[in-house]
Length: 43
View 1 (cartoon, one colour):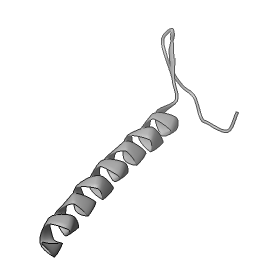
View 2 (cartoon, one colour):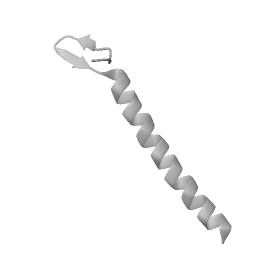
View 3 (cartoon, one colour):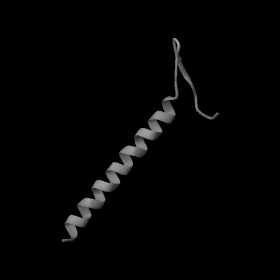
């Protein structure tokens, strides 16, 4: 287990894992919108 755990009361989170997933989803969203933009610009 290479993630650091953050424990708040009875809840335990993996903030870095969550942040990484969030950034990856944002990045893929950005990539797809940029791809769309360049396809439109080519026309």
